[in-house]
Every structure is written in C-alpha cells, then in structure tokens.
Amino acid sequence: MYSPTDLKKGAVCQIDGQPYKVIEYSQKVMGRGGSIVNVKVKNLITGAVLPKTYKGQDKIERAEVTNQTAQYLYSDGTDLFFMNPSSFEQFQLPVSEAEDVPKYILEGGEVQLQFFDGRVINVELPTTVSLTVTYAENVVKGDTTSSVQKDAKIETGITVKVPAFIKTDDVLKVDTRDGSYVERVK
Image 1 (cartoon, rainbow, N blue to C red):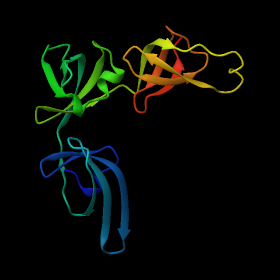
Image 2 (tube, helix red, strand yellow; image 1 turned 60 degrees about the vertical axis):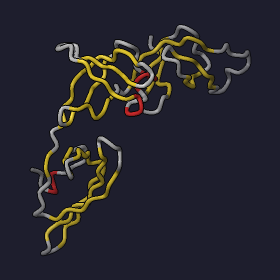
Image 3 (cartoon, rainbow, N blue to C red; image 1 turned 180 degrees about the vertical axis):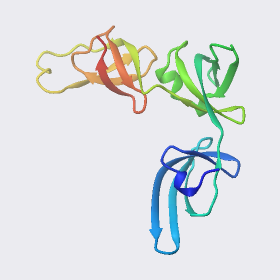
C-alpha cells in the first residue's frame, strides 16, 4: 500500500481495479490539518487522465505492473504479434492499442511489453531507433545555405523531415516519441 506522499511522478497505483501511472504530483501542507496531495494519474489501459486528491491517512493500492522484453514478429493489419525470446510465448495486441509499433520497429525488433493481471496493457518503444533511408530527394544547388529540411522515406514506410545533406541509404536515428530526425548514424 502507498501512502499519499509515496505517489511521486512515475509511481504506478491501482484505482478501482485499473492500473494508473502518476504524471503530476503536488503536496500542500496545512498547519494542524496535515497535508493534502494532489496528483494527476493516467490510466494505463484507456489513457484517460484523472485528477485525484488524497489526505495524509489515505491508503492507495499498488498496481502489479510487470515489464517483459519481447520481439515484434509481424502485423496482419488488425493485430500485432509479439514473442518472448526466451520462453517463445506469443502475445497478440490490436493495432489500435499500439499503432506506433509498425511505424518505428522492423519485424524482429525488440520492445518492452507491460503486463497487468496477465494481459498486455502497453507497448513501450525505445526512445530512438536506427532506420535506413529508402528515398530522399536530391538537393537543388543553392538550397544548402540555410537549414533546409526535406522529406525522406525510411524503411518502415513513414516520412521524416531531415536536413538537406541526407541521402538514400543513409542510416538515421529517429525519435519514436514524435517521429523527428535526431542524427545520422555514422
């Protein structure tokens, strides 16, 4: 059990049988009245964000969320398939619950799966991934004086804005949080 002051940012608790992650935390100390803790929590299954207020004597249940490394196998258009590389156990998740996986992870790539009550509730991608450029437009002479950005198509099929010096077959590091170019891998 958590006390309200244990609910720091990133803590995972259980409210009404659902797992929630604390995304904001603030504490107000009242003279003789004790303290009040205000938190914003995000439901790890639905993504809903709720504000919650707790008093000093309240108890909050911990959520038993576990992480497991898994290999992304493939997508059939409606579902994504993953496998635990050590036990060979397979997991299936609807594309709507993890639509960023096929955008940034190649088949055979590793991700972190989060489990709650034996069920996959979230897929955590690595912060950055290295992907090869399959098509990049050539730079027009004279366009290189300023920080010109152009579109480059990468091997997963998405398009990323990149600097003018990027060419086809370059390997790029791409941020999976917003789909932005980070650097060219040497």
